[in-house]
Image (tube, helix red, strand yellow):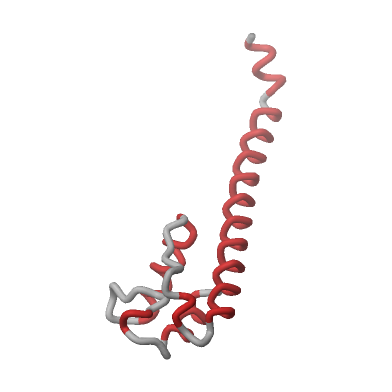
Length: 98
């Protein structure tokens, strides 16, 4: 969701001021790789302030990190809730065994 706007902001920049790194020759794998690294916490914000759209870069960065964190925490809560529900469901069986 935030990879495409970051790639669009990246188009008007010099090679030394790139926002999104280009390890692949095509834009789609570059966007996916950038968002994957962002979700892991590996990002480079040094080149954000070197362009005309510094405010937009920081805004998209903050929103992307916020939504990535919320998504990861939501997945963690869902996994823990499923595990807790499975344990509670088998509580009577485990009490009888004990």
